[in-house]
Image (cartoon, rainbow, N blue to C red; front, top):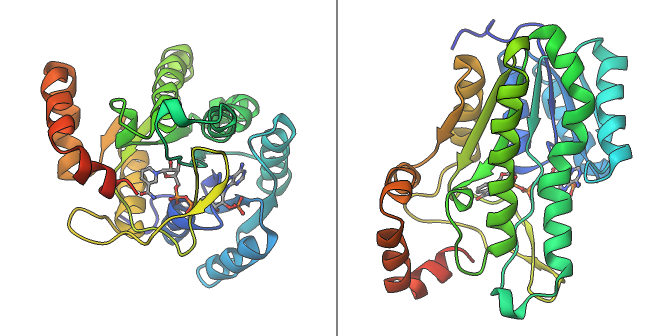
Length: 272
Ligand SMILES: NC(=O)c1ccc[n+]([C@@H]2O[C@H](COP(=O)([O-])OP(=O)(O)OC[C@H]3O[C@@H](n4cnc5c(N)ncnc54)[C@H](OP(=O)(O)O)[C@@H]3O)[C@@H](O)[C@H]2O)c1
């Protein structure tokens, strides 16, 4: 990709102080985009902002919680105050959970939907009129867990499936404004240290680092997201396992279910 590809474009990336969002912000910055970072922890934001400043100075941070209506509005209005336009919005914020439905504190569903669904809706609504002006891109970061319901991940799968509905709707509603909508199904990715998830009782848990075959680096995921934006693709599915699942699931859902049931133990270990 040419280094000039995103020269002068303004990219807002939710949840970009760490993890995949940070990697996307760095990749877009390396390709010339002006960057609006977001997260709730000011210290992580400052650290990431300093990393972007090693590439260029066109970066601002907005410390807010996009799972709230106010947070979504603040992020978009600060982006406009700083750079006067928005070309790219990446809805990356998301949290996972663990636990079978029978064992879940219902609050888990609420927290996951607030983060993963409202966390995308809240910045998207105020951003749309600005993205129309630039015929820009709006990207939703989904997961292979958004392709079919998986054991122990009910709220996470449901929230990521909801993003597909949102993306499909916006594609049709905004077609006349020539908006690009991207939906990226991310596979197993290396975690940041101390990455958090939510246990069945609603408490926070720290995930173990992910290793092994089929685990992608943050940089590989970011490169795929940036390619999706550059090519204005709708759906991008990552990893060989993800592509296979996306192909088989709509055609032979019972086969996928049978495979999961047969490998339940391995599957549960993998999703830890
Ligand atoms: N990692 C994987 O293996 C994987 C696989 C498939 C899909 N995904 C998806 O990829 C996305 C990123 O995941 P990740 O692993 O990079 O997560 P992560 O390491 O936990 O990072 C999450 C980022 O979002 C910020 N954040 C969280 N909630 C926020 C909120 N309400 N408002 C503003 N910022 C918030 C966090 O900073 P603060 O906590 O300071 O706010 C942090 O910068 C998620 O949508 C996830 O579902 C990840």
